[in-house]
Image (cartoon, rainbow, N blue to C red; front, side, top):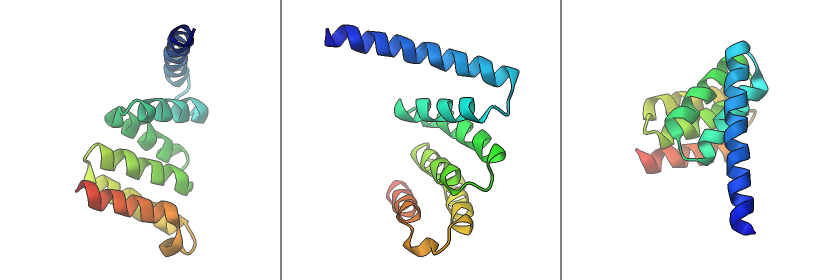
Length: 115
């Protein structure tokens, strides 16, 4: 039963990925679709693809620190260290008291570890 459920979920996930890719082709500003695909690729450790969608999302939601943090993580994992650092800086500008923000600290630590 567990194998069947995993297969069903995998197929459903793949169908959703195709659906959201089609949605983006019809409307590149579809925030929900771009966000879903960024997370879908992150969950599968496909960080170059996740980086692509997080970067797109950053153009759509440029004042959202969470988007820049996500982009920073994707870039660090894809070994795009300069871009990761730039995304951390952008997120820091958007967060009050950023030196105490755990998300920013996590990104900085991840970048130090990976680079």
